[in-house]
Length: 142
Image (cartoon, rainbow, N blue to C red; front, top):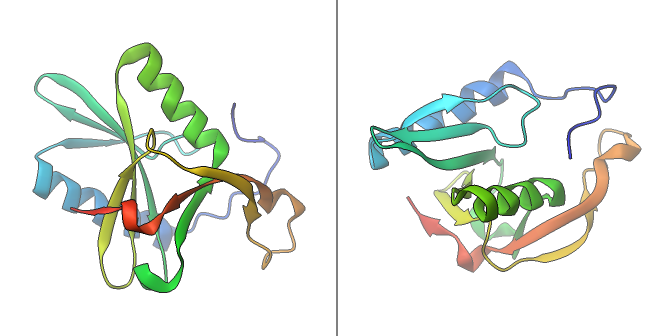
């Protein structure tokens, strides 16, 4: 369940900076030491305390308000990975989303639906795939 190594990487320096800002907010709120994972890892960060690994974190930054859409989509492979890690190691995974008006999160083991989805603005057919959709009203504020 990895990324296609021949696929272009669209992540920009601004994307990385935005994710780092969210990671700092998580650290401040929860006291976690956030460790950035390699770029093609399924999750963005590993969250540690002095007791060890506490969670895996995926971070998305959006240019719209939280209420614009009824759900938030994320690649199905990330959700499958998160659920396997939880099943085999007991480590939960969370999706944190920074919208223009607030920061929210949902556990990737929570209920979701599966459907086709993705971006259509880059003319990349690989952007369309199976995605998990989490209801916006299931997100909690940090």
